[in-house]
Image (cartoon, rainbow, N blue to C red; front, side):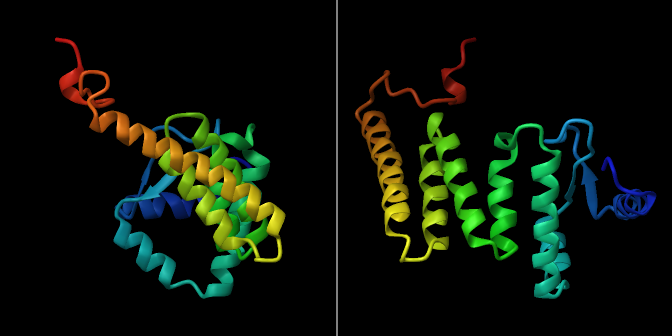
Length: 171
């Protein structure tokens, strides 16, 4: 909430007092407070009451804020993709979805990577053939990794242990 007037703070305190939002213990942006709706239905109703043009403006404002406030864009790349997409900025959103896919693909989140690439492809016009081809290649690599991981797990590689399964913990 840094850089914003007391009006924002009062509004957020009021919403928190009415049990509509909650203050997160940790914020993605250092030195800032982060809030979330207490329930998905509250979020959906609040969102539905905003006119479409205003929603787009708000998403663009959030995306601009995140770009400026985030020390490292990589920390919020998926959020940037979402907000630019909802703001109607398909090209910018697609670029951030690709970056989010690359980030997820560097770890074990291959399914997330494939989904981010799919979202990027949905936003790009058919005329951008070369760009679409490269994103499709990245999506295929992620999907191939998913297939191989599932195949290894089904064959019981590693003693049939599932990653992060509670029964695999010592003790």
